[in-house]
Picture 1 (spheres, rainbow, N blue to C red):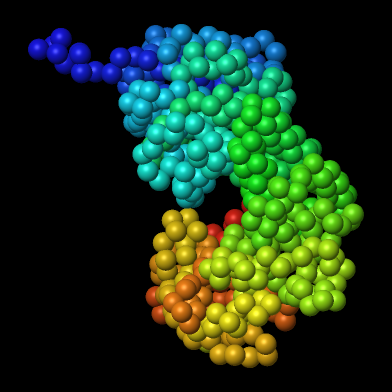
Picture 2 (picture 1 turned 60 degrees about the vertical axis):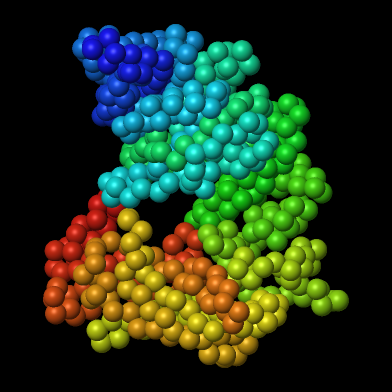
Length: 538
């Protein structure tokens, strides 16, 4: 009987390489999450990158209680993540290997899900869903959810170009001899975004890949940490220089391996992801940063060829990239920020060339917007302005939908669904539907916002989401550009029968969208004040 039970248990086949540097507060949680995966894990290799905070001692004590844990202490700090991962990979003896950062965790069942997918599909690589967990709120955002919506086996990466969008190495399991046979390693030393290059090397080797919808990695995002992770520390232009270099190398690796479609997809991903993300924050930087960023970006985009620009020319990232490439100096940053939003908003002014063709602006007529004339209405970068005016027991939301070279009028906007969505859990709060009325070359609508009712649903941040419905039944989900000035974004205290008072702070997000911070009751007001003072002191 016992022999039969043992036969049903998964054989130890997986190594988990955990890397850390001066992360005594979290590294043991990471290692324990790997050991807790069960009998499928043969070994955990913890590589301490010359920590000075006692991390290595904690790992040594943990190793004394579990023989599966091996601790490797580097004598000199490498300055990055690639070298310690390579050190761990060299020490692995198991058929399969995974990677884990010291401040993250593997959720229960992650190894079993990936190992089962890899062995069942005879795949060299298996990938699953990573979730970004914002701390301390606990809000979770899935990473590349579309890619991991269903179980799938991909014989060759070129059959699923979307794979280039998932540049993480930590939400995947690799066959060890596959990595060694193709000499796939991480860049050594201080090389930010080493995942991008490593992932390109994996795809260039054309492995069979299994995909699972299971949660296999929890990426902890600590924005208030004293030492931000590389992906969060974007304040210096060197971060952008490193990111563009990693993307450039990824493209060259894929192209050099004959993976032309994946190489094109990697360049498109840069426009849609990296460029839009940094453009949303560019207005927050000083003039010196903006000039250096603009110069670096133009140099990178100058390497793109006609085919790179011709594919989906109305895509927001491509439009933004063409504006940057066309202008020697930073310009139109507020408008580019709106275009880089998700979903994109193309705000006025709407210029035309001498022949009547739509263009970016009178100063940049070479940036044509003609592809917008044939883009489906459900994909147009519609611009909606929003202003929130206080009332006796709530607020009045005023919306204005702009025309877009005649496309909106032909589609016939009829109504807009208004929804306030809680940022932490994504739950919908107060909803309303109101009809549009034509006004001054656009369309306007108004809706009451019951702030006490919103406060009763939860303290925190509420994002405004709109769904514009057209005459033929087509709809488009959009966000709204927050109008400032005239006291429209002032903090206000609203009377509430339940809470006594509700503190409401309308504000514009990094992408310019309207959002609300809501704190009900005296305790809620004090918590907001305390948090603000803490941020100022920090």
